[in-house]
Amino acid sequence: MPHHVVLHYARGPGWVPDRPVFEQPLHRHLAYMRRLHQQGIVLAGGPYTDHSGGLVILQPMTLEDAEQMLRADPAIVDGTMTASANLWHTMFDDSFTSVRLAQR
Image 1 (tube, rainbow, N blue to C red):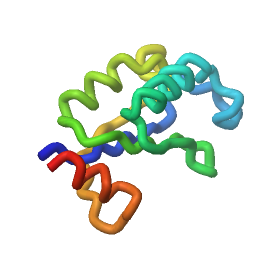
Image 2 (cartoon, one colour):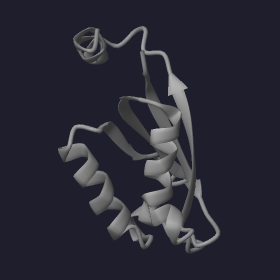
Image 3 (cartoon, rainbow, N blue to C red):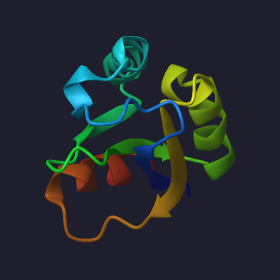
Image 4 (tube, rainbow, N blue to C red):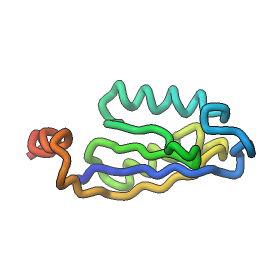
């Protein structure tokens, strides 16, 4: 069974120094994430409070599918951010339990 995927975003070479995340050129990235959220692929996500990057939790899928999604992310393509994808065991969050049980 596929696991949830966590995407960890960090500042990339295209990050504008001395500007917080809300002043970065991330409009296309936000539109991409919003579309994936509307499709039910992105469960939750947002920036860290220290403006160093962000975290996104995806529906269960393969790591390869998640990495393909990252390669299509405008923030990755333009270098504003870098990201990594990790498989995640959801053990202590009831909001994800129903998703996991529905897939059995």
